[in-house]
Image (cartoon, rainbow, N blue to C red; front, side, top):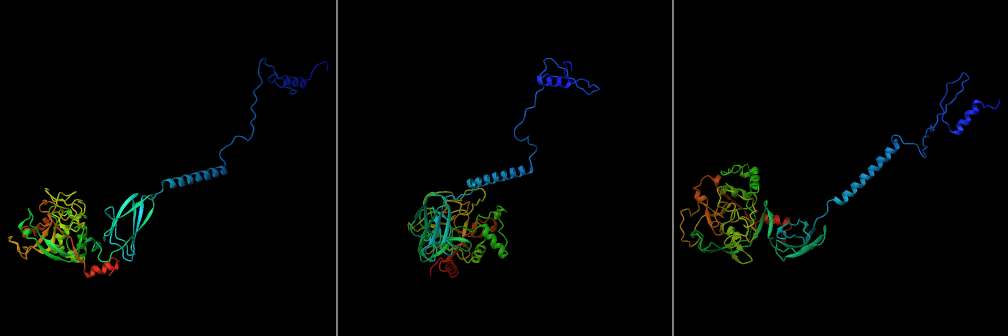
Length: 419
């Protein structure tokens, strides 16, 4: 070989020395020569990656696992939210039971009537404010004090039902209060009293129940629907009968009497109405107004007003009698069953005295404080000089004698009387 290298040997040496080469045009013998470029660097090699190759799009199995994980997270968040946001018992509950088969007539918590126990003698009063609460029972007895210390707590309380008639009942679509009978002084000769209010004289009364509230538009509307009677036409406001909780007005004595009979009751006599409005059993004296002898302790629906404006029954906090009856001074005047006659030994003269007209008691919402006195007497719209009853501002409430057979049977069935 004369000291020369073959082509293959020269290529091997160049590869070992790292020289960069360019390919030469192929010879007919298919040999390849590479030109060496001075200062050129060898091409950079791609880094070798360790581990798994790069991931492509998610595989189906990975999507399933991500979905399951998301659902688990959502369930955890929902459970946590329910735990912190779920409704919780507020205050405490009073569970009242009777010591015998007969329940008490009504449960009163902090002066608020909370209902009549069921036939089995139990009543549940929920959501009372934590702390001390005063409880009494409408059939009398001492005031009891209970104390709730934690939310959701239940406190049992046993009441001893008294024999005899309950102080308060639900009967004939309304709440009623018991007024004790006995001798009662009807009328007044006090300064400011009108001659027709005297002289004071004694009358004998039997025990009776009287409605706590005046009969409402809603109750009278139901009566009209069941009896086929027309609704009252109201001259000052044709839409007034739609005010369900306001007292019904614009009716005659006969219409009021028909309603009372339909619910097993009657209209009160003049003496019954006055005792219910005026008598303070605790003080054993009559009151000048249902609330007392001085200014009313709260709102009263009296005038003067340019137009009649009646309040929902029971909403005038100041117009409350000692017996707990509402609106006996104002709101609507009220029909009673007695004829407008002079009292025994009266020297008063009034051309409407006799058995031609009925007495109206209490003032209406446009009346004065003087007309609202418990002994003040009115006469059937001034003896019908006002013939359009659409403008009469007269309503009514009902009574039922405590010894009424239908009442007693109802109370026995509900376990409210023992005999």
